[in-house]
Image (tube, rainbow, N blue to C red; front, side, top):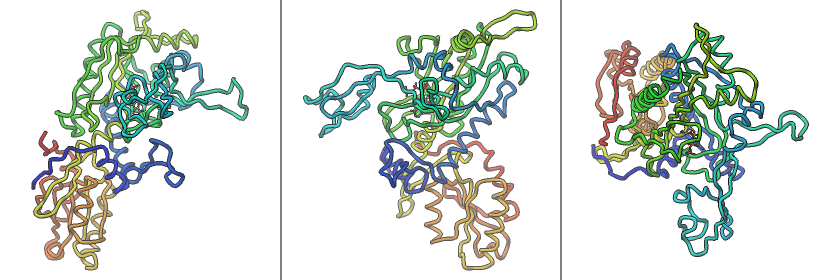
Length: 454
Ligand code: ATP
């Protein structure tokens, strides 16, 4: 097996996603809506894997974190208290020549509208305005009447829905600091320059956890969560050489944060933020206490009151989705044929196994394959495929990252065994058909690391 050494580009990932129905440009039949995407079958399955592995690590496997699902449209005073109305802005510049708008702090990642395209400001014709602050929140109206009092916002982060429920959860979930509240849900930001596929979109699914701790322990918990989150990304199979931690300096940090570090991934566009881990101090609970008049504090059994400090790991499914595909994508030559393979961690892969009758019109093979498929699909997402040459069916499964294929062939009819083909090594072995379910369970529990060189 020889690997072709081309580094993966974002265009390659976009075209794989399109070809295999992971992701489509949204509203395509109406000409699309810039940088908005719809997810097809395998995209939905991959997102489900990411979401459920996050919830498993954050909620299911811990005693100290509970789940929450707050509303997307909140009382607008929430955003006043959080500082988003005044300060959730990015600096925007207009180009008077090409009429495009750019983020002033990301000019090096943008393309000028003139040909040949350069960075905005780099061509002699570029005529950029002074930067002005642009608020990223989408505005909407609640109810039938549209006036100033009906104005509201689509949430730009899920975190505020957590802070305003601190009292409810602390009382009802019978938790005391240190404890956390985890939430997964859509967030909306009117990004000035969305792009790079799903990396920066205007509608995305955030996974945020707010961990409330006694103030004296905040630094220690910040270090703990940074380490945990890095370990989690590794556990998804992302290669170590493509992950790093970058500490924000003081100028880059939000004014309330005492420490922030980004977990960065080496995307085809360079090292970029995958997940942010921040020590938010007591800022959020204090702000909401002041603005709402409801005390968001903790009273310990000795009657001592304090405002817990908050450690926040925040990431979007989209940024993980792109990182996983970039990490997993490989083109290689096997024998005299090229194949594209997604070396996804089996627990992440959209489809866990394919069940393939070698000769679909052979009734014995067809019946056994169908029965095996119906047994396995009760426990896992598996796929039955009986169309086309067996080689083509294997290639199709390789391209969507299915780790194993069980093939029912002539020998199955004689001795009730099937072949299992391994996506990564291409090794094949025979198993009793009655033992496939248990074999698959064991295989999914096994450690896995990418066989690709770093
Ligand atoms: P950036 O500097 O890239 O704009 P940010 O620092 O504003 O990101 P946060 O507010 O810290 O991002 O959001 C937390 C996480 O949400 C990010 O680490 C990223 O995973 C994700 N995220 C933020 N904005 C977007 C977006 N427009 N599209 C996809 N994911 C996003």
